[in-house]
Image (cartoon, rainbow, N blue to C red; front, side):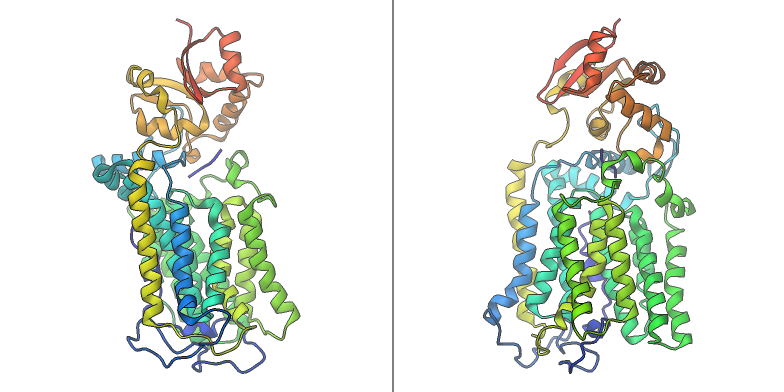
Length: 517
């Protein structure tokens, strides 16, 4: 089971005043560091001036190294250019459609007869975007939003790590972080949470270095709170950073109190979204059902993304343990937060990678020569240009590749579309969102919006799919007269053999059944 983008690149949300000052935000190597007194390399994309040539020595020519960040993002963008295949994408599309029709953010669930909780659109910004793009460009346009989200994450990682590290170190950290996130790179609003987490971590590292509050985090929190339920991680990152700043004694008490106003104001901003103050409780809405959802299970060593995170975290810890690198408490606590997130759930491995990436960049740079390359116009042009090239390639291949969804009972569209309006369908969990989007004439008994269903209903549905004792009670309680189930599910045989349901039509993956007349 699974549960759960805006075209604006969250990299732009990074502090426009800070430049590369965050080079001092990490720990300090026990040797003389190059660059400016604040630990930066001296050149910024904002400066508009070419710094004096430095960093020409290295294992690769300077021009090749300058292309590395863009090449990393280019490869990532092209790799995720694929048809819409996330089961939750479809109900997000339906939510955007409904919002455009009603402009209602809260109210009774409009789709399932078995939901018991109010339906709140706390991810309405990306859902609205997805709906508009679908109307204008169809499913291929919606599919293109996934590469766009990947590009946003990649650019944010580059912008957060590059002022702290050389081209090679920044490209390496960005690559590993993207691999660590790969398991969660699907077309859902959570894509932007990963980019926001990187940006917020980088911003707080800058505040730890110079003691200045980044007030722009407050309105960006409002945007994040309208984008995805993980918005509260931005506040958590700030609180953890504040604890580290206090332990480091890096600022005065008055400066610390000013910094503490940022997360407080961010919570207040989240409370005034169109969804209302109830949004503050939304992160806890799925707590009771997480035990039944695969992505809310602890990560496994069989998951490449988790292994990539362990490699990144292990490198940081080894550098701190085996060298003279003096890590600050701010770095230590943020890395501890990242590791805790990654160990908690498979779903939060990507958030852990986002938090650890800026710290990993400056930590690894501490082992390298101090005269790292400055950020130049050429590097910025190559990075943005290669990212744009990847998005262009994705836009060219998706019209033919993504015209049909890669998920759902697409070959059963005709019989499903012929069902009477309001027909209740006992459905496979994974296909519920697709039914909501594709066949509004039916009412699924469950879908990926687990927060609107009672915990007991979710458990009973799982027992129903397994044909566990009492599965007949589920059929009677829901009142379903049709069933759309995956071939081979135990309940398919139970329905046909024990309850005398008949097969309406078999598809390649699903079978449509009808109750006895």
